Each structure stands twice: as C-alpha cells, then as structure tokens.
Length: 255
Image (tube, rainbow, N blue to C red; front, side, top):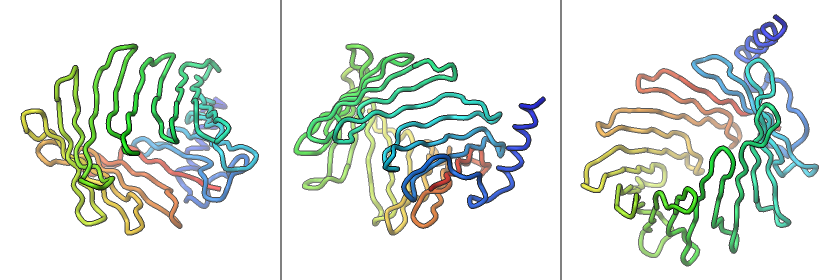
C-alpha cells in the first residue's frame, strides 16, 4: 500500500506541473546541464533518470534510473581518462550487478573502437581518412556482421551517401539531401534501387533539431518526434504515431 500511495502521489504531482514546478535537482551541476529526465508512456508517468556530476559540476559521472514507483531500477557510470575522454561506461542492474561494460578507444581525438562485453558482446570499429569517417564496421566476436562505407560531397565534409554491406554484399544505400540549411532528407534504397523509406529532419536557424519524421516506403508517417527548447536548451521530446497520438514524452529538467 505505501508504494502504491507513493506512485499515485508522484504521478499526480508530475502530471500536473510545468517544467518550472518539477521537484528540485539533486546535487550540483553547471547551469544548463540536465539534472533529471522524466519519461511518460501513453500519457502516464513511467519513471525518471537522475544525473550526477563531478565536483566541478561539468563532467557527468553517473545516471540513476528510478521506476514509476520510486525504486532504483539501475544505473550507468561514466569513466574518463586524463584528458576527459570517455573511455568506459558501466551498466548496473537493480541488484547492483554490472551487466555490461562498454569500452571506448581513441586515436588523435577520434573514436576508433567501441566494444561491449557482458549481456551484449559486440564491437564497432571506426576508420578515418584525412579526418573524415570513411567506414564503420560492426562485429560480433571476430565476425564482421555488417559495414557502412561513407561518401562525401566532393571537397567537403558533407555526407552524401552511406553504403550498407552485409557479408560483403551491398544491401542498401542511404542518400543525404539538404534543402537549404534547415531540412535534411535521408532516403534509403535497397541494392535493386527500390525505395525502402526515408527520414526527414528539420532544424532551427541556429541549427537545433526541431523535428524528426520517419516515413515508410509509401511516404506515410511511422513516427514523428518533436523537440522543444527553452533558452536554447532541449526541454521536451514528444513522439507521435502515424495518427498523431502521443505514445512517449521525455521532459528534461536542468540546473
């Protein structure tokens, strides 16, 4: 009964308040950094994440998830090297057990490898040329599962095409097309030239992502995401299904 009352009270509180009325942040952090994010599924409060920073208030050390009943549901710890590059991420379940560790390797400031061990065992290798990412290789164990090869607009760093290979065989090509400076359309075709779907992203004049829409092969909306900002900071993400029904909302609270 006490857990039910806690969940009921918390749900009423969170459903009824604006961003300014949310419970205060825990700990300290630089102005504008996220201290909490709240998730709502089909309009119902589903839990939150608490963000914790180092003594300087600028480096994220951990993120703790609470379920809708208020119980700790797991946590993530972030570890850095001497130059503040993120080198490992530890995922802890609600029992306090480490279930996964992601290690990250760098070369000249570029991420060159990400490897998961634990409940997921895979590896991603990033290959560069002249400072531009050229290939992304996805592996399980020592087996290459797929590969992305990137092609840029001549003499620029603007991505034009991404070629996806499975087992060394071309599977799909994604074309990136900009309409002015505010709309990016990514269209995917299979290896026979048949359209598979597309994603359209819209940006504000100051380059903030404001909308992302996934379309199927018939140009019907699959998922629409709306990003809302306050003073240049992201404060809310709304996700809608084809008919416009909101199925998920994430609200960000900041220091």
